Structure formats: structure tokens, C-alpha cells
Length: 480
Image 1 (tube, rainbow, N blue to C red):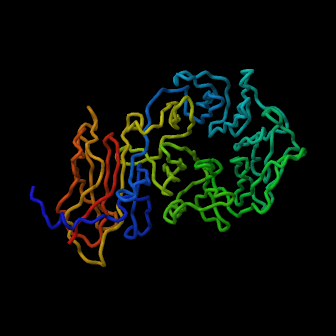
Image 2: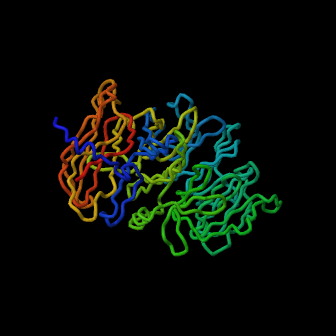
Image 3: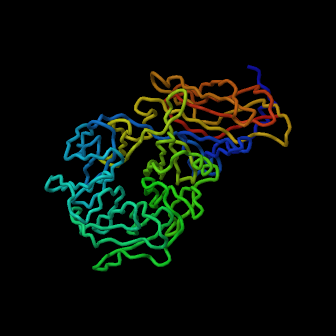
């Protein structure tokens, strides 16, 4: 191979080769997609201050029960789940599902525990599983709110949002079967309905459709929860199931007083907008957002808020470690689809994931490079590369990444990375050009592309589908 020494000597870093997702409606301004790649901030700032690593994969464990997985909850070291139309215990062998009761709701299921009981709400009725007595009981107390979908637990009380009202109510202390019709209060800052309730750090977040109010347990014998003075905000919740706790904070899909969509997190006792303008513009185009749901997790020192839009077939993630957004998607060629995660719980020493399509259970782990045997396609699109409208000759590009990571056998034995480019902001693309990233032990492999043509404005897109570890440190480019 003939090496252009001048091109090699003129190699310069591509600004933003490693970076978050940011797709502007004006693609020539920014068409940066980031799919299935976490942005990691390094402590070695002199060499690689940031890098991309692949998202954790899903190790297939077993099929639990019959039907779609609705929710998991860990209580006192044991795992319980709502699968299909049954609630049951998932044994420590992670294969045996012992049914304990049934429900009739076909939508999402809310599970809350008080250490003694599990409260199960299916949007139609409420049920209680008593752990010690091993009994399953439908709630018949007239004070219970039928049709409720949102609940949480704090200081011994089950807390339920009343549908289509400004109120939320509480159970008896450590008794999810006892509900008094007078044990309700209202969020009254503005006349909006309560969307959901979330307890975090013993602060009760009452999220309305247009407001947020914070309560604490003041110990009053009549009704223990009282408002925190001044903790009222005109920031609402647009999707009840989007509220989740991650990074020791409450996150949710919300709206401001003008109704503009955004994603928020609590910073202390104040809501903070964390979505980008580009993401908010995309969300505004979605046909339905009220069915969005979220989970929070912390894996590999990455606290992550995972927000899925079932109708739109999309999953977005906020990585609190780096303050960046990415898409976490499934590759079913020739297109991407929403992530299969429907619920998550940490139990039996593993991070366990339930599949929205069926009862399959997985372990979420960085040690797995597939999603239950299916490929994880990672994709990164660079920022636009140009210089004052000049036509530039792209002489040489090198992807700086971990090489020599091939598998011992099978798919990934001889892994490759593919590159394509666009000279119109990402509307049309070149053919993909593949380069090896090194079989196992071929650590000196370099990923280099030469003679890439000319362009006034160009973006590059890199993809990796082979089931190997991904670590992308940046890119170098020589232009003339």
C-alpha cells in the first residue's frame, strides 16, 4: 500500500467524533446520531478525556411464566414478577415461576412493597400479596381507588394517585388492604389532575399534568403528608409511567406552562430541564407520548434513565455519568426498533430485565455482546465537517479504537467496522466500506481509510455489528 506521508503528517482530530446524539431538523447543521454507545468520561484527561463504549448486552436466562413481562420487584432478597395475567415469585434458579395470584388488567402493572406485602395495581383493581401468610387478596375496602394506575410507598404508607382528580390517598400503616375514604389530600397549586406520585429520599413528588408539588411526612395524625413551603413548580408530567428514579433523583417526561415537551430531573428540590433542543423537537413530532414509560438503573458506574415510546417504536437514554443522550435500540435489519426492556430489577446478584414481547428474562451485563443472541448494532454519526464553503479533499481518515478484540470462534472472530459518508447532511449516503478491527490479540491493527473523495460539507457514519467489545476513542482526518 502506498502511504501518502503528507496526509499522515497532517492528520488532525475530528471534533465531536465521540459525542452525544444531536439531530437538528436542519441536517446540515447537525446530524449526530449515537446508537447503542455510551459516552464515558475518563479520569485520564490528558490522553482520552471521553470515549464511547458499547451498551451492556442481554444474556438470555429463561422464559418465565406465560405472556409478556409486565413488571418485576425485589422484596427482602426475593424476586416477584407480573407476567401475562399472573403475579408470582421467581425463584433463585431464575427459571422457576411460582404463580401466587392473578389479575385482569392487560396494560402496565404497578408493583409496590412495604416489606411485608406487595401491592399490585392493574388499572382496574388492586391486589395484595401477604409475604408471611402467603395469601393473595383483592382489595375490597371502599376507600380504595379503583382504576388507579400509579402508586408508591413512603414511611409505612402506600400512596395512590386518584385518576382524573387533584387528589392522592394513603393506606393504613404497613397495611395495603386498609384504605380510608378520608385519607386523601389535594395538590392545589393549580387545578390540574395528579398524573403520578414518586417518593425519593422521603420527599413525595406529586406530579400533576401541569404542575409539581413536593410533600413531606409532617407526622400529623389526621393526614401525615404536608406541602413543603415554596416547593411548587409549573412543570407537569406528560406520561405517568415516565417518572422513574435514577442517579438518586426523579426523572420524568414533562411539559412547561406553555405545554412544551421536555425531559426533567430533580436537582435538589428544583426541577431541571435536561433534554436538548434537538430531542424536544423530535418529541414534538411524535403522534403519541402519554404511553411512554421509563426505568432507572446504575450499571458500570453509569446511572441511566431509559425512556421508551411504544407507539413511536423508540427508546431514548440519558446517561447521567456524562450528561449525554443516546438511542438504545434493537437492530432488526434493515431498521432499528425500540429496546426490548419492559421492566428491570436487581435481584440474586444480577441486573434482571423482562422482555415486553414475552416472558423471557435476561441478565443485563457488559460481559454480553448480544441481546439474547441478536446483534447489537452500534452507530455513530460525526458532526458536519467543512471549512468556509471550500471543497476539501479527504485524503485519509483513521478511527481510533480498541483493536484486537475478536472472539475466539464464530461471529466476531474476525470483526469489522463499516464506514459510509454523506455530502448532503445525511440525506443520501455512499456505500459502506469495511475495515478489520483485529482478531484476538492483533492489538496493533489500525483502522484506516484512504482517498475518500472531495466534499464541501461531509458527515461520516461508523457502525459495528460484530459481537465484540467496543471502545471508540476518536477519529483523525487529513484534508487538503
